[in-house]
Length: 234
Image (cartoon, rainbow, N blue to C red; front, side, top):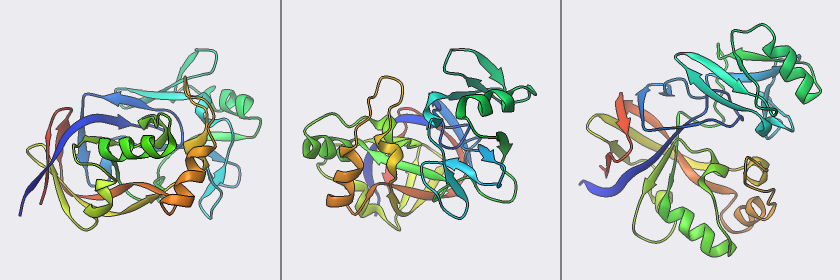
């Protein structure tokens, strides 16, 4: 049975894990996810990747949201806090990152260890955003949650919570299988660009939604997606 879920409202790609990224009007999807998404990470001298939490693979690093990355072709371009830009293939980039973060780091392309916290594609619906805004009594901006896809939906509530194990067709070719809810960390509270620090968000999700918001999905069939594409639950 096929049900129309909505349409693809926004697409986001994050060239570097845990760093601000770029909105896109269209994107190519392969088995790993959006091509180029979180393909790079900031790595410390212990080999752990900069993140909002500390685990076996990741190291919490404060200040990551002061940087913003976009792609120029296949090369990430970093925008520093003072507005200066550097290409990832410029040898000074590690020095500049280290200077800003106050700890020795380097920009590292993904090798054998995945940079993803959970999986390839992260998804949030506009219904879930509206529900969270209602519960918080204040705006809940999609940028805080760093999703790849924002799907425009009409029904109320956290719709995507009921999509686990279902297939989603996005546009004419791409098919995803929703795998699990997305656990959230302190990064959803952090200041970024014009969004202020707000520690209510994670606390509310932990107390009322098991610390999750949105879902992640695996890629079943590759292709290209664009803003406005129809989204069908299969």
